[in-house]
Amino acid sequence: MRALRLPAWKSDPELVEIDEPTPGPGQVVVKIGGAGACHSDLHLMHDFDSGTLPWGPPFVLGHENAGWVHALGAGVSGLEVGQPVAVYGPWGCGVCARCRVGADNYCENPAAAPVPGGGGGLGLDGGMAEYELVPAARHVVPLPDGLDPVQAAPLTDAGLTPYHAIRRSWPKLVPGSTAVVIGVGGLGHVGVQILKATTATRVVAVDTRDEALRLAQECGADLTLRSGAGTADEIRTLTGGRGADVVLDFVGADPTLKLAVSVVRTVGDLTIVGIGGGSLTMSYFTVPYEASVQTTYWGSRPELIEVLDLGARGLVRPKITTFGLDDAMDAYRRMQDGTLEGRAVIVP
Ligand code: NAD
Ligand code: ZN
Ligand code: ZN
Image 1 (cartoon, rainbow, N blue to C red):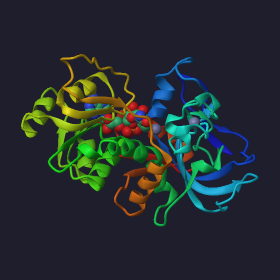
Image 2: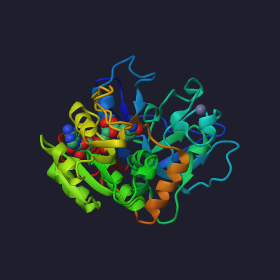
Image 3: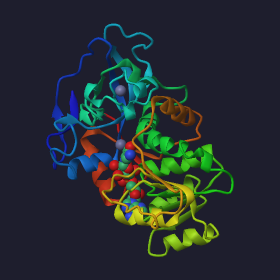
Image 4: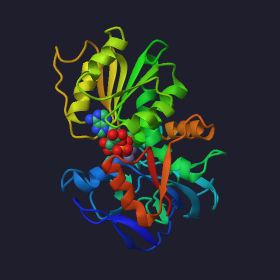
């Protein structure tokens, strides 16, 4: 089968011919209907070197995947060949306390996972291929009626990651609150929709690109701001000087972290989702009192089921452009150039 494989760190992926996977006991092979292209893949191609992560190339890219059950390994029950499914992406050990409650994203025994802290497309072969081998049936989540694999694929990461980040801050997103979304790309535009669908907060979206701000508006943002020298003051003014209750940084670079910390409110949440390489200095006088700063990684399996429900009911609809496997590199180039709106999904 054809697959888009990262051959080495600091290189572009290549379209290669590899063997079709066969499922071992307890495993499932999914025929891929859609594999989302995430900005993390660009970090994999450009920013990492051997030793940074506990795994490395070669592996097939694609960590947000959905499709149909193709083959079941011995002992797998409760799934049927042909059934539409999403793949839960972070693959933990399966038996630690976190994995047992469906939070493989925070597996406490990564050394016993198929690959420590990764999954398909992140150290192991992923979904930018005709088929993906999923090492345990628990990661295969049936799609609710009304959701097809192309729509479902980005929900497994561009949906699940912001959903998890937002859900943990729900108690602060009361009517009268303000949430700031920085970076309205693949994750951010779905984040805006999730905020609107699940809370009554006022959503302020910030990006450097006008097209991204237009998309934010389409997704229901109450206010959009082009990021620049005056953005923090604008947010302070519109919140009566208080600042934002929740700030979600989907970029994570020095300038966005600087903006985030300058607009977060006392007792607010500043959540860093983007892996942009920036850093934040935290000391007694640089962060408002009781503001919490956290990074988040992906989301849990129960949260994926909730996101798929939002998708099936039309409450969350990623804006998707599809590409074939041959054109996958165009998707990444457009992401890099800032000419991609929403999410690119590769349809093999
Ligand atoms: P994307 O390229 O689709 O979107 C990024 C957006 O940020 C773009 O709209 C871009 O214009 C905007 N942007 C860039 N610099 C900006 C700045 N200085 N100010 C304001 N906006 C700016 O990327 P994506 O796929 O949505 O991923 C976003 C980030 O999240 C990446 O770093 C990715 O690696 C990371 N990520 C993290 C997790 C996690 O679990 N923590 C999961 C998936 C992706
Ligand atoms: Zn991702
Ligand atoms: Zn575990």
